[in-house]
Figure (cartoon, each protein chain N blue to C red):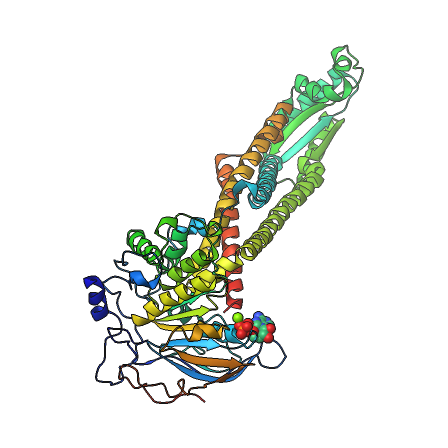
Length: 363
Length: 253
Ligand SMILES: Nc1ncnc2c1ncn2[C@@H]1O[C@H](COP(=O)(O)OP(=O)(O)O)[C@@H](O)[C@H]1O
Ligand SMILES: [Mg+2]
């Protein structure tokens, strides 16, 4: 009992025999060194000891931190049995796939644009293979003499055949006499220095008129213009899908947080009433949904990477040059890993804001 | 309560002036409530069910704002205090609820530890006081148990331990004995008395008038349909207890 007497002397409310009003306390007393009030054995409850040790004074400086070990336990985590990680996983997977497509399209567009600027295709249409070849060679000579022509190359017949074979069948190409079964044009690939415009094309046409009357001169960008337009639209589509998915993710976070807030309303109120700050309570939910976002993000990202790699391999197997050009680079993968990270940030921020908004309503 | 060491009673801990509360557009649930709580005293708040006891206490422990009037707590104006200031005041108040409101998935130990963790007490300084506190309420052997496996009286004792672990200056209990048998009710009341003897100001709301007699030195606040009556005048002119005059004289009303 010596302990208790000591506590009484050192307690927060000193005995005041003079009867003078003590000053009002604005600052709580420091934690008493002695034990908490002990219950006498005759007071009914089975209690032997008296609490000892430093119990903190109330009203101590609020610290900007979580509720220690309890953060995990205060709001039980549904983990993968709850819907939230799966919703986030699906969102992240779709976002990553959409973003990957956008990046691939961007590469294709950029690469193709670089390739096609200054690109001119000359087709020499002549029923007789030998006449075609003579004209092609003459055209090449003229082209190489022209000013502003960087490079001129005849596409080898084998390559042209290979390009056409899938459409016309290898048999059609196989039989080569002086007369083709199907006349295939000779192709000359010309690279001009600088961009192609109508006057330059006309100059080329005029120059070729005498040596190769069967020549057709086209800017490559002309007939690929609509393709570029389509690629650009697809890029915008990909960007819009990514933006919409980010919004949907934030909405999902709001819903998940609201559900959690509803389910744990009593706990929140109790913690709130024992002096938990908005930040402390928000952090509990932030962490909880952050975990969901981390797991969901990982699952979704893994799935999306699988799909992207699979598709990339499938298109690469087609041997189509542009798709190989569109292959994702390491920095693209870096951008894609930002998606699950951004998803976690979005969900945690949304959770924080909605918890704080809800707390403000209950005073 | 005047304990052997002398009950500390040296100031106003809470002060209501002209307080009114309405929940909707209806009539006021509480009207013209005025009283002063003096440090170290033991108060009963009585009144029929629906008289507004819980509403009054909710304003006292800062869960509810009044629609009019002034509330001062620990010398601070609780109405104009910015929101960020409220947690600091709340940490000086312990609350015991009729329905305990223990966190269902936390053990008795973790429930009692909650206020300390909220206050940012390091883990190493938590185990001992919490264990001691649970022992004090006679639950040393139930520390690891979840609330669902405790009886009503045991749950309420965990609730009391949780309310006082942070050593609040003001302990507010709303019908703490409502869900326990009369025997346990008396025992719980003894816990409040013991705390009061050591300096904690205690306010217990109850509609059970038999309880009032069990604490001889208690002051009684009676609510009747939203109006506070002061049958003994003790609220406005508290008896000089422990030779201490209330600072500032009569208040409210
Ligand atoms: N949250 C609330 N919303 C609307 N009315 C309420 C609310 N809480 C209490 N009331 C009403 O206020 C009156 C007083 O209730 P309460 O304070 O709980 O009384 P007591 O605790 O004395 O039984 C009752 O008529 C009750 O219906
Ligand atoms: Mg009530």
